[in-house]
Image 1 (tube, rainbow, N blue to C red):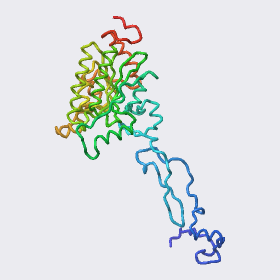
Image 2: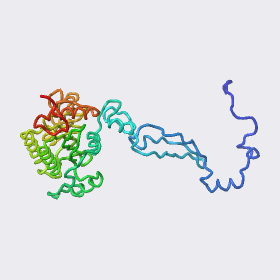
Image 3: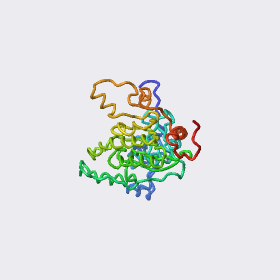
Image 4: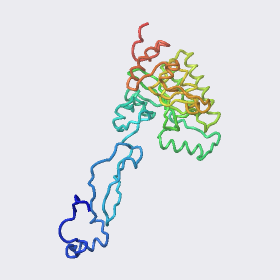
Length: 353
């Protein structure tokens, strides 16, 4: 034995070999121990809050805790409500949901603009209490009796119950800084904002409203493209919506489209690209086919930022990029600019010249 070894064993008899050194248990306690009564278990580590910030997966935020039970270790998880934290799709930063909502669903670290639900977009853009929804009862028909894993009619019914609206496009009248407009908003939470017969019809009806009321038409897009459950009928909406906007333009109307993340497919290839002014939110994905499909098909390396709003602005496909908090005053400015197209009623004198 090395000379510097020092035993840590306490002096006196070894309690493992001397039964007299072991203090007997109280009979009542001993009875409960043998019955494995959970009331006598040790409490383990006391509650001290959460163990992490991420809400990506339940197992990631719930660290294991040790607690003795009948001589064995057991693992205990702390229950915590989900959805308190969100991960930024751009920079990966974990963001407290309440803070994100206070900033208009914009990442405080990298300024990434999250996709907004349709109703939230309406409330953020329009003056409070001015929205009057139009044609809210139009619903999709399963003309092709389409059926994959779930019948199309059943899929629509479930989405209507979940989102609490009949279709992907919200159409109505409202005001932006006291200026009357016709507003159309595609809601990505309704089947990815896809364009079917009802969406195409509502866009055409919005153009008719703007023409008859002589008010500007403002469209917000967030869509995966044409709704393939409706086959050729959905593709026909590309021509229908483009023709409706052309008719509005010939009548002297004024239209603005704001492209938000993501705007792809048949929506990009139709009414989203033919308005008088086309704006986009920072970092929005805008294109027809997705970048991964293009890279795989062409077998080429795509340039940095391909199909993002900044890339499209550089190439001249959009007219400007507007941050969400600056959107209302910019739209009001553009509405005044377009008021002279036909002397639209803006609730204020027309700008000079």
